[in-house]
Length: 151
Image (cartoon, rainbow, N blue to C red):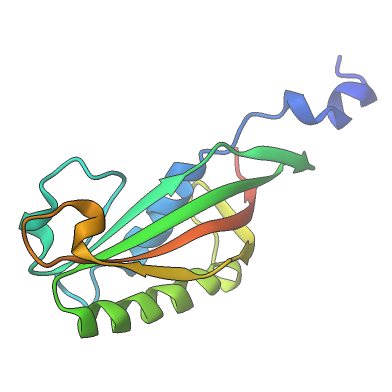
């Protein structure tokens, strides 16, 4: 029999799969009609230069922290890679709008986003990633996502 204290204990909830939640949300958006060559990756495991002709989004999800009632907060970083700075800038703005709209979307299998708190984007040049080609990077770092887990 479960006591009331076990029900209220934040550490007894099964952790949300925050990486799966982010991946499902990004996969619903990309590729799309506006950006048919966009790809989504969880890490830079392939040669980024082969992806430079299109657009690439790389996401990194930090560990989730239970904030009560099966709600979780986790940090998220997104990086956009593009060889064309104008296309990359437009795509970055489009992606930012999509991510900020996650709380208003229908839940996915891994959970439901309740809020997204960004700190902003920064742009880096090709020398920062030591790439052979001109690939530009836009990073949305230290975004905090609050989500509700589904079990």
